[in-house]
Amino acid sequence: MQIVVLDGYCVNPGDVDWGPLKQLGTLSVYDRTHPDMIAQRLRGAEAVFVNKVKLNRDAIFGARQLRFIGVLATGYDVVDTAAARERGITVANVPAYSTEAVAQHAVALLLALCQHAEYHSAKVRQGAWTAQPDFSWWEIAPTLLYGKTIGIVGCGRIGSRVARIADAFGMRVLGTNPHEKQGFLGTFVPLDTLLAESDVISLHCPAKADTVGMIRKDTIAKMKDGAILINTSRGSLISETDVCDALRSRKLAGYAADVVSEEPIKLKNPLMSAPNCIITSHYAWTPKPMRQKIIDVSAENLRSFVYGYPINVVN
Image (cartoon, rainbow, N blue to C red; front, side):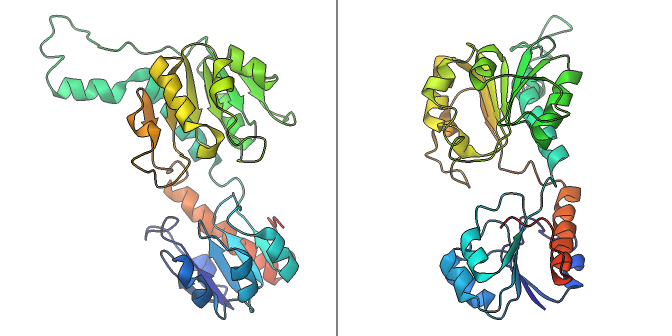
């Protein structure tokens, strides 16, 4: 079987093992693939794996030998699944591989906004503490999370894990979700109630028609003054301009995200100059065990397809 990986670098820059896929056929791995090169690299391929490379209708119908598309991620919006279905091509993803990692990062972002540890560490190294007459010194007091309310928007695996961590901090946990999830440690409420009562709001939902742009001027107005917003889901869930305005007016006390509307981030993005704003480079999912899991599950997806019992199928 001819197997092609069109953009393998982010998943494996060299520190994890493609071996499980190599066992299933002849594997060609490209770090990145320009759209103009997709057709050429798919020529003769029976299985292809992509992370962010987009496989549109033309690419799918042009790859005459293709029988299987694997997405090296959970989100599969990069693949025209309808076109794949027309061609009889199976599309499979890797669900829930990064639950622990993304939940950890969401909480890390929250603590970064609340503790100001990096800021004070830099000041200490500059001699600011040394110059003080007292044993304890700070410029920005930490924000205590104990007793505050966190609202989880999207109560799936990651949202539920963040809820458990927040509960361990002594926070009151609210959640909103299209359907109530068993095992969620918190109280389900309508979105408007969550916005009005939460000191911290953490986004954990996919980008869909009813969630894109859900955090905007009118929904921000429903939030508590001084609320903190965390986004480790998708940049398109928020209006970046409206969030920036809310940070400048101090309606929002802070915003921290691992995702933006256009990635890599552009210098013109309004968040680049927003106060009390932390942006990381969409790397919450990247601990080494998570990336090896992507490859291992992807190989199992392909193996199961070959043996006639496909798993993790999304089309």
